[in-house]
Length: 153
Image 1 (cartoon, one colour):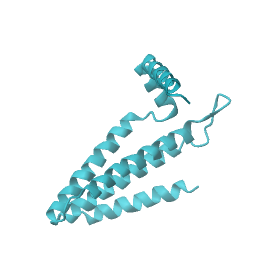
Image 2: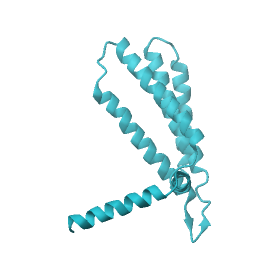
Image 3: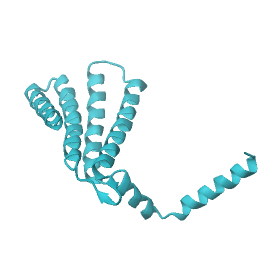
Image 4: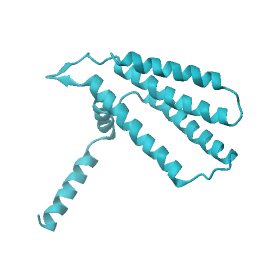
């Protein structure tokens, strides 16, 4: 393909993207990728707290805070994003315009599971800073395992 053709394609795609309104893009994203932004706020708050308590724990234990640890947080964001988008698609897909209600329960279980993962990690970080909440970590772990086992229907 010639360079001139690639430039024309690039400008055509750019014009198309700019011509789509922001509302249209958001609407398409909500329908086909993810729509529960209230849940996302809660999850992001816990992920931020996990990062903060993890860094604090490392500093307290005189362990270096490295780019590797921060990179793991970025990887977690990508994993969680991929997970919630996949859950959304599986629970909202249509066949011939007909909604499939087979997996309506899945988002609730999956979203609770992610919240519990983050909460448990935060509690573990706090516990390692000599705040005795081992009992709470055990309760969350049991509930998380129960949620997981109940979803293995």
